[in-house]
Length: 131
Image (cartoon, rainbow, N blue to C red; front, top):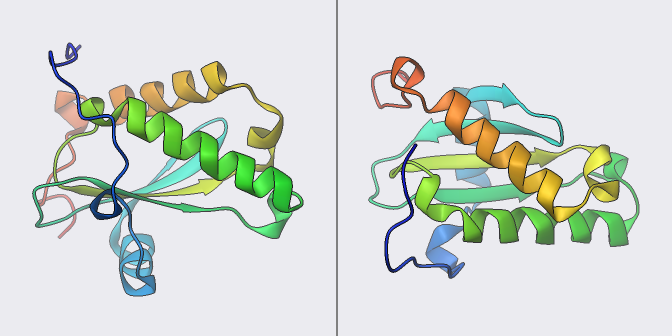
């Protein structure tokens, strides 16, 4: 397991987000799908130096309060655990309806488990896998 660096960047800047529809579609179409308890993630290596995250919460998730809470929780989990995310990947997270009722700790454990199991040496996210 990787230990956290001494000085961690725990900000969530615009360059850490996937904003354009074109990139969302590319990650959906070419990325690898991973299921977790509270979300489904699509991962695609990118050519940039930074990892980025995009979040989608459909109306199936619940009303706007539940959707926004789910997005806030995922942003916070990503921000706090950015050092665990491998560099140069785009991650699109589709929120499941169960996330709206979950607490932060459960979601963070699910996210860390997702990163550890799918970024192990035998399942390493790489540019070769996406071709």
